[in-house]
Length: 88
Image (tube, rainbow, N blue to C red):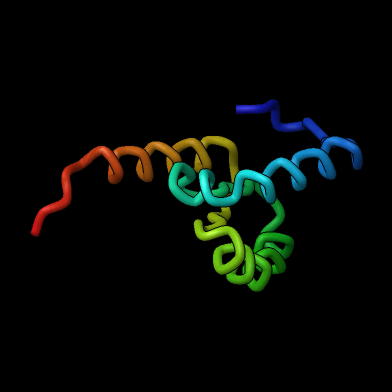
């Protein structure tokens, strides 16, 4: 996981967005969620409406965590749920 203080430049953000659009179908099959770490509760609340649109557009949910540790815990839970065989 990146350091907590890493900021992406505008060029990095643009390059990432273009790559994601190009690989949208593959991402839908591989990515379980985007986990956003935001310590500020008000900012997390502001992300919620965007998260709904994000999920519809990208095909996987945006999850919000208040700490890096919480985000890593969420990721671990998602991965363990995917690893368990589905029961009918």
